[in-house]
Image (cartoon, rainbow, N blue to C red; front, side, top):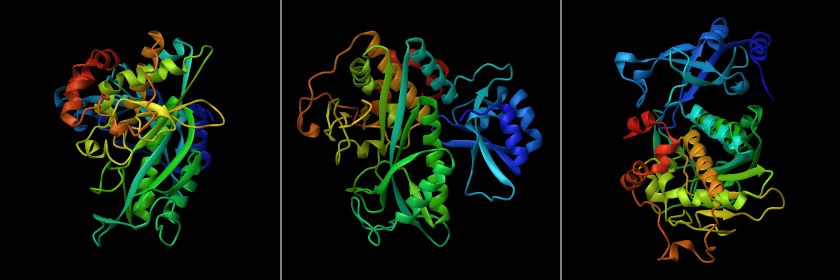
Length: 393
């Protein structure tokens, strides 16, 4: 459903909304927000709400730090876990300079630019995500422990699976927030869970991913647990990935060159898809890919083409839940479009366990290696603003 400014204003008035959270992401992918009262909403849409850019890591210096949040009315979302009397809603925002220019480090605006380029090439991308995460117990002070909520395994059921009710509540909650959960189950690791939701257009899917993480963390904590999206929280157990499913719509057959473009640039992008030291403890272990490879169905490869009865898609299996999803989606689109522009073809399919292929090209093995590859890449320099690259370096 598309919302206008007037729609949001009416909703706030009619539904007894008392707080509006204006949300955006830092470069590290963590959600930030400021709350305003309904009386300030009209000004937020027309003039923006100022904040201190120097207080956000990687953004501005104190000498010139004023930035403004401009809410996107189409992202209106009720926060169901907040009180129903005096409701709380959230709006995602564009970050701008005082003169109205888009802020170069605003990842959501970077993704919008990638979507616009795809549209100019008459290509529409749809994204769907599969999130894996662990549930850990908290101590008497409300702090996270290293004790998972259960010792269950893949698709086990209650009482072995102690996350069942939390997953149920997460699914019902995100459904209220406009997402369409498709499947949820216990994963292979102790206390590990997976929730998948239906694909959507690029920007909506990225917003949904941010909503999902925040809702999952909030609901887990409400139930006495901590939801961890850390890629490898328990040594020797399954890591948690963010599997990204991509389909493309065009009047031409661009699926293979798009997928080939992503495969071709995956090493350049890895620093952004896997942005923590812990990310590299996951890659190469227990079906998490470490080679630049693809196959039909094979879950050990970087890209796999799932067996489907409907829309043709590919699944990118290397990203993890610590990524800034807006930046990741933007780079995936730019890589795919480059593949289309250059009519790239996929290499030979990998028909064995990709980890056993000693001759295969490898992903970066450490965060420092991934960073070195990324910032020496002409592709990254072409796709991301120079100011953003400087802020991360």
